Length: 417
Image (cartoon, rainbow, N blue to C red):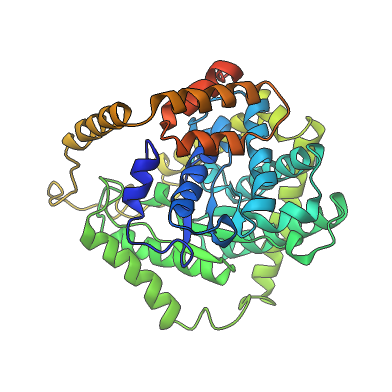
């Protein structure tokens, strides 16, 4: 998605006021959202009709994923500007999906996933309130994104603990009064890091267990990974198996017929209490360090995740933790066949499309909108209207982010010793 032209192609024939769209985008999230709004406007659909989610969670990028652009302060400004703009103009949009998924993929355990995710959530709420927003005006549109790992009961307890902690934080710490502000709405994706290149058919079973954990734990939406994702992008056949896994769990298993079906189980309740207590201890530690952004700058969260990942790997290598087909129950296997390969010509075609776009658009208008955005970066104004104007002039994602990069600078990851 390099420009509004690409977004127009992507959503050609799709009624934007009839669907909900989720975008896994972070540093340039405001730009992608502006493209989506612009497509709708060109079709006569007002922004208040649009529903969807942008991930927009920059703090976890500094911790585990690395797709940051700007330093912490201007990145947080972009996020709170998005909160403010959408609360007025796009009220049905979920303006952030605070992500524990990538934290878990990087090696965090279940307790750390809850603690670090909710600590990031606290930081975003603090930033929004500091920017002058009322908690009950934006908090109902906060959403979360969690991982579903293999230990079914631990994962169910993890989701239950996260809901209890978040409700208490929003009520007691931030004095929210709207029940929707206290609700932990979350999407779940099955755990990519648990999938193995060895005996990939086994991954179908892993994904089914993880799907059950997510549904039993109360997820609002779900993505199931495909069996071959440890080897390549999934094929159409493996994607269909992943989809059918969701559908069988949803329509044949009965587990979605009631809310919190494992409530009252002595084991699940005990695990929930344990995870809640341990996660709160970590959250309190982060608050003592000055909150999530400060803990990230000090390397505390990164070190905790690295230690957890190292411990997990050593347990596998020492056969203390069994991974079927990897350190036990191995078989002789042939090289995988039928994997998806992406033709490099796709990139070359995209370069040509951008070149053609720049030759045919009103470049004077592009220059004017980018200059207005540059000026706004050095003011206290909300940046979203300026980003939207640049998008509508067919400025590219790179041009828009380039202006902000020049004004805000780039984040440099501290080297940990």
